[in-house]
Amino acid sequence: MILKLTEVTAQAGDCDDEVTLTYEARQKSRLRSQTDSGKEIGLFLPRGKVLRHGFILTGSDNYRIRVKSASEHLSVVRTQDAWQFARACYHLGNRHVPLQILEGELRFLTDYVLDQMIEGLGLPVCHAFLPFEPEQGAYHSHGH
Image (cartoon, helix red, strand yellow):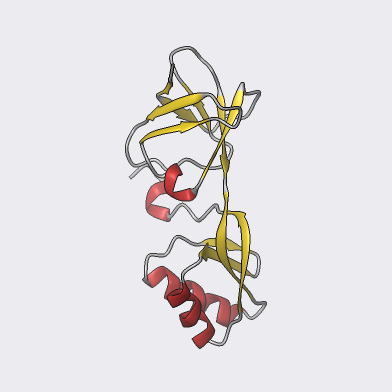
């Protein structure tokens, strides 16, 4: 039997299970998946909401499942040069690339064309297998 999950909250607390999802899967409002322990689940969530690491999913039976960000193949750019950092953010943002911004570090899903563009700006690109939690975007943070 599939556990139907219809609500999402950003609350902390104890959970009954966890589900590890890629960034692409965390953008879907309708999804069939399995929890980390193997329980079949179906997401039936409001459209337009991206699941963030740590969010809690629940259904009518109050079974609580914590969302975890899956590790993915990422391009990683590191620099302490604020101008170079801003340039890289500008060019990636101009292409609407989901981008995780950390102190002196940018992460995006690996794409060789984007890697070449960043290298063309004079920044080195390395690759890693890490959880991906891109910026939400200002237009999402106010419920628009």
